[in-house]
Image 1 (cartoon, rainbow, N blue to C red):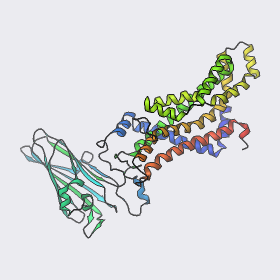
Image 2: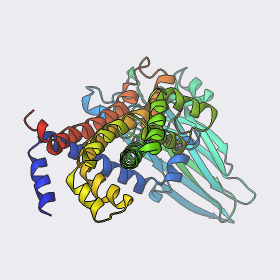
Image 3: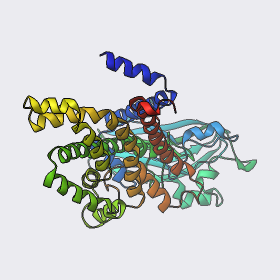
Image 4: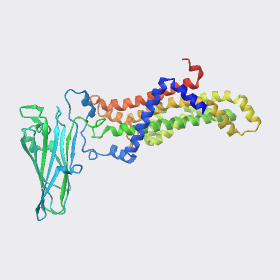
Length: 446
């Protein structure tokens, strides 16, 4: 206990260690939040889903917090649902199973920019006779603009922005602009309270319908959206546990097994040492990234397959030489000779006397290895060889590159995952350098 208390006392003296631990703690908290709020199956469904999954989000929208930096406030997506607010719907029974259902979508629009799209989604429940609806738009200055009338199916979508009859009624102006334009200055938004009134007629007892109005903004959510309307927040959140798990498992798996193999090679010597050395020499001349690319192209792009190859090649990497030189010194120590004298078994000497002596050197190296594996996973994803199921930071960068995000001005698409990758690497690197100074007395004065 005194040793642990002394360790933390030393750790507090390094600001870099405190900063690194803070970053790592925040990343772990973000990973836990992602796992709790978005289960694995839901994350995969959301990220692999088509536009029907993200039908209520805009395409290529910037994060909503960008409005804090805009002089002219850009519209954020407005989503009104009768299922969430039944007060928007008014039902009047006329007798004989006939009734009217009026829905009033009312919202206050105080933005300086026009929306990008508008859509109205209906869900209807009926037996034989389909409900009929008529719609009109009411502006803040009291103008009423007739819109479409239709007979509803069980699922019906009215793409207001694609209504050619409404475009003609607005004198050739697209609805998302013409419905919000100031009549005295068509290039400016008329701010105020807008209403979309839906008047429905139902012909059967027990029939009903609900509606959802979506006014797609230029800004949406915490992280914005991509070309497939997907909320980038999903990939940013889920990229955190994937990156941390890949980095930690690869670092732990390769470091621990490498240490045990090096200890066994030194202790047993002979053919055991020769075999391990020959395998090490072969692995050291093998290029890691091309091998992983070949595995992804010809075998599997599963993150577990890639992780297994990374650990397997890491076990016999250059680290085994460093550990071997340390264990050669440990083997000649007096307490090892004492252990031999009282008849300790080889496994006891290796795991109880040799490895614990080198563990203080392992910890800093292990911590600094984590970001290298995190960046390796992201590199494979950027090259198009990431896991096809999981949303990750590297997949975001790959999608951004493929769709020319930087050329089209969607910098947020690239910067957000890049910043998270940088922070992760920075956190582990700062902690690792501090631990290296604590466990290596020769570096404390540097």
